[in-house]
Every structure is written in structure tokens, then in C-alpha cells.
Image 1 (cartoon, rainbow, N blue to C red):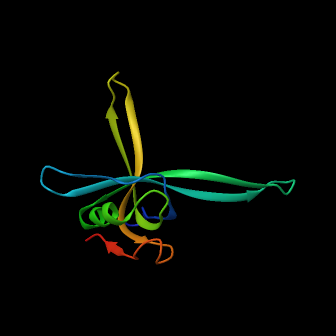
Image 2: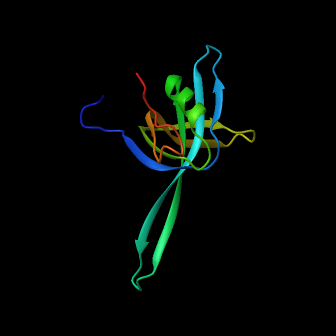
Length: 123
């Protein structure tokens, strides 16, 4: 870690759809999912406003396997990780960017009836 810098993300939110699980050629599990967080504010007139922010999340290894097994659309989840931005050229030669959270720790939240509580941490 570079001195004087921090790249840490902590989110609690709900999955927007079921996770997409795959494996690399070397057999490493990879999972992608989107999660929503909400921000509540009150304007000058006292009206409440709710803004939803969508986050793209990727996890690897055992964390990915747990996410693929226990997470599904609507589940409440706590994640920790770091931000990472990737870039690529699309079919038309335009540069595209994607910022996602690389998850190193996840914990299922909610009642026991919703799901079995599980926690993982990447090495």
C-alpha cells in the first residue's frame, strides 16, 4: 500500500439481479453482480427524496463461490473491497470505462429466514 492513500469501499445494499458466476481458464471462480444503495434527503420544502445508486461488484475465489451459492436478487448484503476502473476499446474503436468494486469480504444480512448468515474474506 502506498503511503498516504486509501482505496476502501464499504457498502450495504440489495442485489438488483442474481449473480453471474463463471470460472477462469485456470479454474478460479469469478462472480459479478449489481447492488443498489439508497440516499435519503429532504429538500427546502420538507419533501423527502430517495436516490438509488447502482454499484457493479466483482469477487474472486472462495468469496465468489459463496456469493454465487447464497446471493440472489433482492438479498441484503454487506461488502468490503476496493474500487477498480478498467478500460477497453469497443467494436467501434471507442474507449470504454467500467468502475467496479472488487469485493474482498462479504456478509449476508437479514433474518435467518431470508438466508443462512455467511461471511467470507479474501486472502
